[in-house]
Image (tube, rainbow, N blue to C red):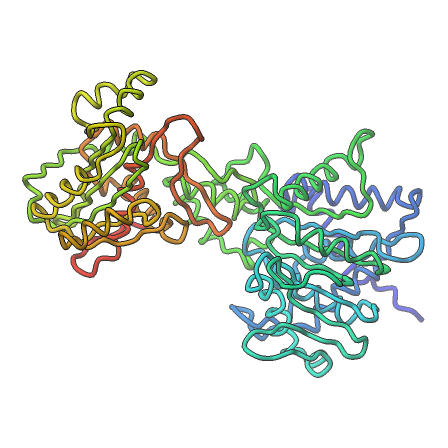
Length: 564
């Protein structure tokens, strides 16, 4: 006699939906809408030729019992999907069309960092390879760079090695970097593919897997994969990502599309697309970003792979440091943010105002930063001194006389700065670099100037002169995220903790008010002008950050860098 005991997975599936809808399981509005969309389709989908096959979706979930974790606290243990993951996979793979093929051809999942998305998509890749019933299947792990694309395949290979059911049946290309997994029984393959790959044509895609879609600057790779699925019976494009900062990218486009589907599936004028599955777990608009309740709504794996103490630490930092705020919102609450945002708090900057007595600093070790502008514009030189465990900052500015006259005419607030010598002028219509060289040489004679950082793009000749003629050590300091991230964050921390004394130069204060910060997908920052063609300057801030960067790398002396 057949068992009447309810299937445990079916019970979990129903319990998750009930918990989300009755509030017992913390969930964002769009997650609730995803559940409601499924239930609405169960009720009305047959009218559109759709049917829900629970067992088809459950088959994917049960496949994960063959896999084992290979790193972190669960290394070696069987892979355990959490309720929200089981729900998504059952819905994504369980819905069918009238012809019996899969309903969804695009799966878009957006969750904060550390919610287990990479390991999950690697396991799904193995399912596509070995258990989806597709002969000659081609599965691709795709990213902008091969190193990124290889992460999914590496996870899949490590799980394969630890699975008795798969280890001997799936063949790895081996080597230091796995490039290919093959399932010989169906002549199927699982490979990496990157936008910089030599060959992107001739593909016959059964499944395209893209982790961190928000990092794709254009839609080239997505379109290459999507257009190569035409000859397959039931292909799928599967993206799992964290929120990004460029809403015009392919990631931003799919985010908006998925959002519109979830918001409008039950509205007469809403967006309808039976081929597109979307699951977006993010803090809602009016949520307090620093509340643990909000963290639980946004992070379905909170307490599992997402640790509460880690979020507490990062939230505390985000409260204090503006540059950390955007990263916290985007990476841990899954909120799309702008790449450029206002950065430094003027009140905190003003609180660091204090006397900088250069006579008292004679002989003290210091580091310089030179932001040498074009011949017609503003040049800034900053010295960062270290004395008795504290930082002291002094800046100097120069501009050609003709440019200064134009500034006075267009923006009168510059006038007092020229009159008071806060911005020094050099004769003529172009900057006289000899004035700047003489000043730096004079500083090297008064202070223990260890070295001067400069941007090689604009100051190579001046740097060569200072080094070869005067023996001043000049250090190239490029203006990318890799160079500017750490000293920019240190500058921000020093301001927040009153760890720097700056003397209150009004030109520098204006620049501090102007500066914005740009964040890359990895959370690295660098200072940028807030808007083009506004005349706002940030040269003094950039020069100071370069000087701090050199001080941070100094071999001698000690200073406590405050970390929040």
